[in-house]
Amino acid sequence: SQTIHQWPATLVQPVGSPLSLECTVEGTSNPNLYWYRQAAGRGLQLLFYSVGIGQISSEVPQNLSASRPQDRQFILSSKKLLLSDSGFYLCAWSVHPGQGVYGYTFGSGTRLTVV
Amino acid sequence: GDSVTQMEGPVTLSEEAFLTINCTYTATGYPSLFWYVQYPGEGLQLLLKATKADDKGSNKGFEATYRKETTSFHLEKGSVQVSDSAVYFCALSEFGVTGGGNKLTFGTGTQLKVEL
Image (cartoon, rainbow over all chains, first blue to last red; front, side, top):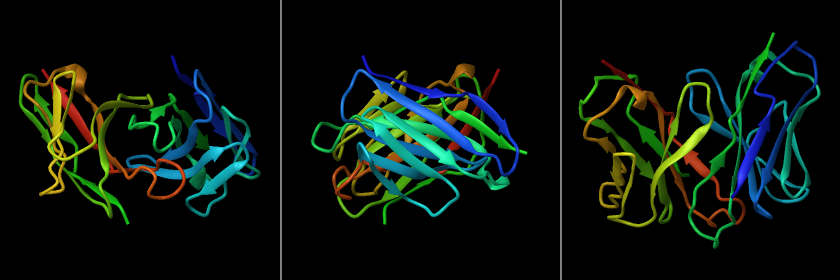
């Protein structure tokens, strides 16, 4: 069965420090991968998605970047964190179009607090 | 572009009450529709889905029917429990329309609190 792992679960970082959040998927190949952010009391904002290794699409201009160095690994990074980067970050995967309608499977999330 | 509108929360109900969370959408094509649930401190879990008009998705006593004529996908449950307290997200996806990933568009979420 497919599983998705996301870590760390919580993170407190000072302003200006770097960030690296990692997400890995098991039990499937060539998944679509996504990073979402959920700010306090707000909905979900799609940050990045990837349809393959090295292929990253950015949805909104921001202080963050994403990379996909391996088929089932998706990394969210920042060189210098801002206070506004605080939030709940969710990784998700899905099958490609044409492979069925299964929605997304989400990781358990990372609570990031920038202080 | 695509959008999803959910009723404002929080919604507070007594246990065994009837639940309705309204969701309407706008889309350029023929989307698939989803409800996700997020329990406190956790990620999102798929609750149910529907892929074509008049489809009814159901799971754990929750139901939602894809109404193309009213562009709605309202979530209902006949008798809620304290354990149903969570945030519920309505979402849509037009698979393949973007030519890339299966991007889901989410509503802002509705918090449900069920009390004894």
